[in-house]
Structures are given as C-alpha cells and as structure tokens.
Amino acid sequence: MILYYLVSPFLAPLARKRPWLLLGVGSVVLLAGITSGYVHFLARMNQVDSQFLSQPASYLLERQVFEYFFYYVAGFTAGFHQAQLKAVIHRLRWVLLGGLVVMAAAMIMEAEWVYQTTEMTWWSRTLTLPSALYAISFILTFLAFEKLELPVVLYHIGVNTLGIYLIHKTVLLVAPKIVYHVLPAILGMQIVYQPLLIALGAGLPLLLMLIIRKTPLRKFYRVLFG
Image (cartoon, rainbow, N blue to C red; front, side):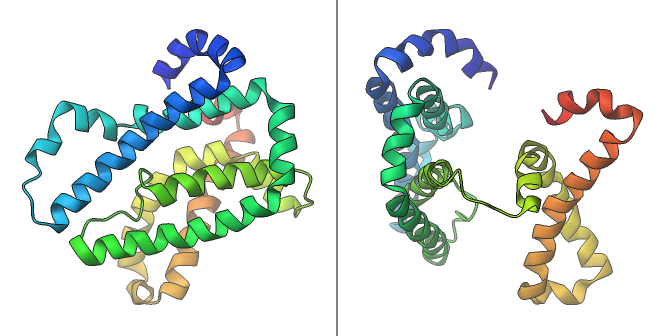
C-alpha cells in the first residue's frame, strides 16, 4: 500500500490521459502472476523439479504488490472516468451478474480439482484466472446495481467492511481452536460449522468496532478501522 501511494503521482496523469495503456500494463502484471501459479501447478502435476520456479523473478510475481496492482490501477482509472464506466456496466449488468455466478462456480471447482490432482491448496488463492475474473465481475456487478434496494443490515455491514477485513483473519485463526475444544462434535457437521465461522468472522469484528465506538477508545477508531 505504501508503494502504491508513492507511485500514485506518476500514475495519475497516465490514468487520466492513457487509461487503456495503464489497464494494459496492470493486466500484464496480473496475468504474469497467474501464469506463474499455473506453471507451478503443471510442474507438480507432471512431477517436474520446480526449484527453478523459486528464482527471484517468480517469487516477485507471487507477491501482493504484483497481485493487487491491476485492481489498484483499475480503481485509479475508474475514478477519472466514472461516467463512461457507469454507462457501459449499466448496459452489461445482467451479463456481469451471469459471469459472476459462473466464475464463482469455476473458482470452487478449479480449487477442488487442483487439490485432488496435486494436493496443492488453492482454496484461498487469488492468483488464478477464475479468481481474477470473479473479483473483477464482482466489483463491476456491485457498481452496476448500485441503486438496488437492500436490507438495512447489509448497508451497516457494507460501511464496516474495512474493519471486518482487518480483523476477520485473526478471528478465523482463533475460532476453530476454540470450537475444537468446546464443541468438537460440530467439526464434522459442515452445514453447522461453516455458517458458524461466517457469523463469527463478521460478527465479532462488528462487535469490537461497536465497543470501541462506545468507549473513550473511539478517538482511535478511524486510525484502527478507517
């Protein structure tokens, strides 16, 4: 994030005057990272020595600076061309929604196939083609249906998503250990266990943010949660 802030003054003129060039560069970086992952997968599937893939160039392609660069420049570019973007995605909103559903299914099936084939865990991997297309279609679908009326609770969650994002990983690391010791029987009941993790992953961060807003610690709220 610090690196992105540092290069922003150089990217802003490009995003305004040459948006397609900047998006093209971002796409190349994203595809390079995705390709690196598939090369690792093919090497493992064919039992090829993949030590050469651990060289610095391959390592850099897997890092978050490169993983999220496309989304950063896409958001940057969209900020300068909001009217044009909204006009296009509004016309394509149902296509985007359909793509979102397809990519969600493809992302899950790919991760399961990769695990069954090579025992590589791609369930949380974002540098895959279906994952990237899912992320892009999700963002564009969300923007295309921005006037959709939703329950108030979803708006409340929406304005607190940054805080949930910052805290949920810690919650999901601790919660399974507590469940293991307190309610081990539900570990084999995925229909109960998964909704419980989702509820804890979102609910506990929201509760913590509410407590901080109601105490003298609220002066630190914006620093902690944005």
